[in-house]
Image (cartoon, rainbow over all chains, first blue to last red):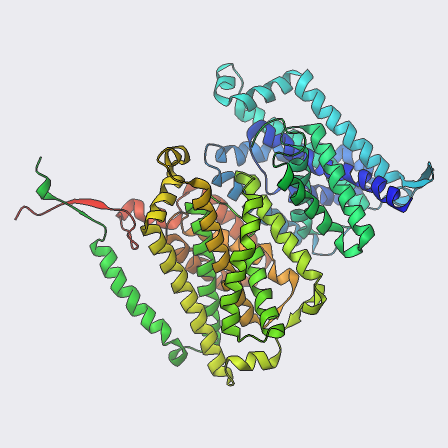
Amino acid sequence: MDWLNAIVQGTLLGGLYALFAAGLSLIFGVMRLVNIAHGDLIVLAAYLGLTVTTATGIHPLLAIVVVVPVMAAIGYVLQRGLLNQTLGDDLLPPLLVTFGLSVIIQNALLEGYTADPQKLAAGNLETASFAFGGLTLGVLPVLTFSFAIAVIWGLQWIFYCTALGRAFRAVSDNQDIAQLMGLNRRHIFGLAMALALAVTAIAGILLGIRTSFDPSGGGGRLIFGFEAVIIGGLGNLWGTLAGGVILGVAQTVGAKIDPGWQILSGHIAFLLILAVRPNGLFPRISA
Amino acid sequence: MNSQTYAVSRSSRAARVSAIIGTLVLIILVAAPWWAGRADMRLMGELFLYLALASLWNLMAGYAGLVSVGQQAFVGFGGYMLFALTMFAGLHPITAIAAAGLLGALISVPVAVLIFRLRGAYFAIGTWVIAEVFRLGFAQVSALGGGSGSSLPVAIVKSLASKRAMRESISYWLALSAAVLVVASVYFFLRSRKGLALTAIRDNETAADSLGIDIWRTKFVVYVVTSAFTAMIGALIFLQKLRISPDAAFSVNDWTAFVIFIVVIGGIGTIEGPIIGTFVFFLLRETLADLGTVYLIVLGVVAILVMLKAPKGLWGLFRARFDVQIFPLGYRVSKRDPS
């Protein structure tokens, strides 16, 4: 039963990792950009949630309503103002610019909020649980997992059932022809980044309720998200959810064997899958 | 057209003059223990080690197209090997540094086989995962102090030299020779056949492939050699620091972010770039370090601006105006005097 419990808890934790990964997967799919600052943007969203909740006293889950549009706006401005200039055949500029951005965000957060670990106070939600088939499940992890499913379903719907999604797929397939067909790719990329950071905002708030965070935590979140994307297979959103779940289960099972091995066993699972299935489990596009 | 009126040469007057100046500067630097203070020597030692790290990262990213954000894996690995080999195997520190390089090369082989499956930016994050695995792995080794780290025992430190002044001089000379060795190796490697193949890959992978260059193997060799050197530099860094912990040994900021900024600001894909970048970096650090986090923000902004506005860095700006190469790699055709 202990092992089953570890697997179930790991699955629920995987929901959070899938939320870290969804934004990363989305922008890679649309514009082949890998954002090194992604993890720091998740932490930034958590800090924005902290500011909103302490300023207004509302519940962190309600703060999502404020933080999501703010992060989306940041995403659009960031893409149009900075990241669009780096896109092209050369790999180096986007990589190094987002790396620089990561250092800037980290240190700006350090300056603004100090290095003290913070947490979003969510009252009862932090500890509430319910019994389910002999296991005790936390309300927050179940809620996080439901958010992950809803977000990925929503992204899937946007991608395949809306005009915006058609524009995303068009620029993803061929930027120049999409441009000829009357799509402004700079604007489309801006919208894609806005959408990605909206997802990041949800991930950041849920992270902040679940655990404490500090300005230096971005790198770790980026790595978890990245591992989920690669495990699941590039360009496949449901695969990303599966990747997050595998990573989460590997971590909780590892922690069950030895608490010091939690994060390490997640990385090892990732490296094993990379060795056996270099394109991930459910690949849709090749890198 | 008369072919006799043209000459093809590799060297140039600028290269010869700077080679002479470089030799003189090197002699003055070797003599530093007789003219420089302790603090200055320490600072210069650190500068040389950063110069070596930057030249190595530049060889990988600027020439082999292997953009790594996980070089701290090998810096930390080298540092830990220095501690382990001197403390448990009883090696002399200098032997241990060489052994750390060898082990660094060995461990980089399976790492390369695994992460070469990732392309481009995903390769970059993959290297970071490896560095995290190393960090978490070494934190589990309780003989090396686990998560809190350990200090180099006094007896081992004294085995380098019994007097402190002598130890500091040796440590300085080791750093200086590491920098010279790395820059010279990169220079002669790039002038060789393999170096030409590497430059061809950088310029156009498909064309290089069609000319019969084994791309995977060339990149693999660069990765393994770079890892070996990086591990040796790591051992030297922690011989200077005398204390190691997982967080310090595998710090992404100290051993990768700063190195990337150095190369980008100086000029990626040139030998001169990392040298200039290192001096600019230390100049900025010594003048702005009191600002703390603001200094790092400034550094990030400068790196982004350079990447967007002058992707070839400071050396690229200079060269666009003056057409000078201090380390001549290419050949140039010049008109001979008809006299």
